[in-house]
Length: 314
Image (cartoon, rainbow, N blue to C red; front, side, top):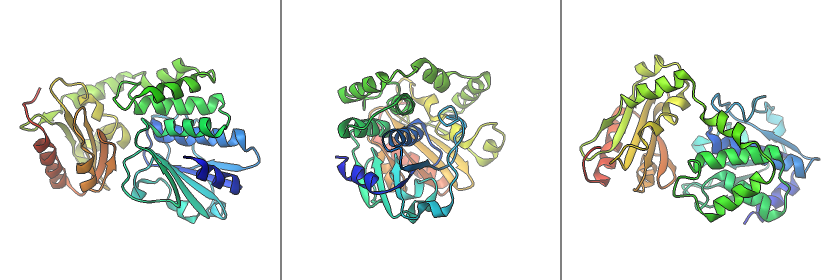
């Protein structure tokens, strides 16, 4: 499955790794994990990881992302990880590369690279990168394994979500065999500050319900300006406050920003991906997102989510 990408890696002296903007654990973990794999196995090559920084995941990249000039793309291979749509790629300069490739586990929405390996059966892009290394005989090291394990547990909900399968656990075991400190990973990911707990409590009190029981939070631009947290924390970080509400099978978090209304959709039972795609987004069957034009579009999407289910609110 990965032979074509491995051939391109062997052909190029410079490899530049991209992923989606506002990175989560899987995006950053797959990017940094692959960077370490390539540096370990191809020390003669120049490998960069570019894109916006993440305050939440700064422990994965304490020195920040690589800053490179446009000229670095001349004759280079650009690999895009964990990204289902062209508009989501962090750093548009990937188009300057001599060849582009993509490794992704999102439901296919569009072709964005010359060479693509897409498999939605994987719980995470980090799982795909781990399988890439395993199946092609590339060496892992502790730094690569720690980054990949981080993304694997965040996209599988610590192996709780139903995208977890026997392959997931076999690949996780392979990463654990590299001697990584899982206690440090979990502490960095899940240790809460008092301020973070207060923010989650604040957002829990904002939860509303549609007539058929879709839970949702809507944060206006004015409200956002008063919150001491980045947009990623407010948007993707707070959608989880509704995840375990009894009787709720679909939930959504809407956040007004200068670029539109960010929408994070989640479900325990329904395939909400077609609705995200209809509104210009994408993702997975039970975890998708989109950027909407305005509040009216958000309410229209919410009405469609409501129409998917029956029952009453929790």
